[in-house]
Every structure is written in C-alpha cells, then in structure tokens.
Image (cartoon, rainbow, N blue to C red; front, side, top):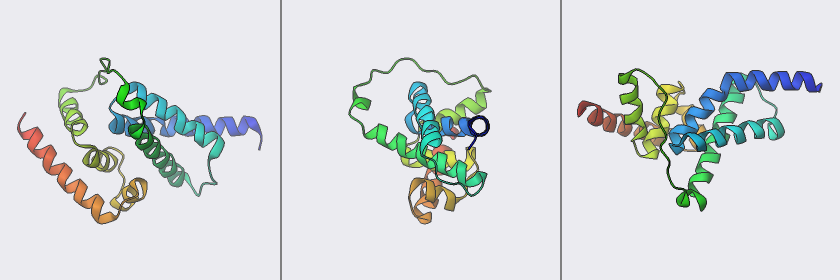
Length: 157
C-alpha cells in the first residue's frame, strides 16, 4: 500500500476516533496523562497490528476494545499503585455537564464503563457486551445499577 495513502487514512481515523478512545480511557483510568498514554498506544496498535476491517463501525469497536484491554492491563499493573496523584482537572464545560460527568466518574468501574459507552458513545447493550467481554444480561444489570447510583448521587446535589 502507498505510504501516503496509508498515512492519510490513519490521520482521518485518528481525527474521527481519538476523542472516543481518549474519553473511554479517561473514564477507565480517571487521569488525563494515563488516558493520553493509552490513546497513543491504541493508535500505535492500529497502525502496526490492525486486522482487516469490515467498515468504520468495526474499526471503531476494535479501537475501543483495544483501549479497554489496555486500560485493564494498566489497572492491574504494579506501577499503577505506586504513582502519586498530581492535580488533574476536567476540561471546562457547563456546570450541569460537569456535575453529571463527575457523578459518572465517581461510579465504581463496573458501572462507570457501561454508562459511558451507552450514554456518551451511543453503543447498544450487545456492542458493550462485546467491548467489555461480558454477557448482555450483565451489561443490562450494570447499566440499571449504574443509573440507580447516579440518580441517588445527582438527587443529593
């Protein structure tokens, strides 16, 4: 394949999906610098290890699944527990949006990820099940419990 064409396609893909990859990593890890590292690694894997894709939806799902796997690996890693947290702020947004985002970020990981993928990225239950490697009933239950926790949190504000 012509390198110019490949680079152009990669740049288009990065422009189209880097925001979704970064947001997923941010929801998983909660730290901007970690999310940036994971985003870079996911796109490096796209460049060097990507399978043949059957459309843009397949490419986006693959990127999000790679991102989720990288985040899980980092959370299990030895160095993750040794990192000292520096002040990391959320980007500027309307206060209602920040409250909702803060509430989502405050959820336990098992609820935070399905909520983010469903409401922020627009994935269906079956697509989330594939990304998270869970059954659809488990995803439905996590969405239900996550919404219940969010309701309690947001009504208390």
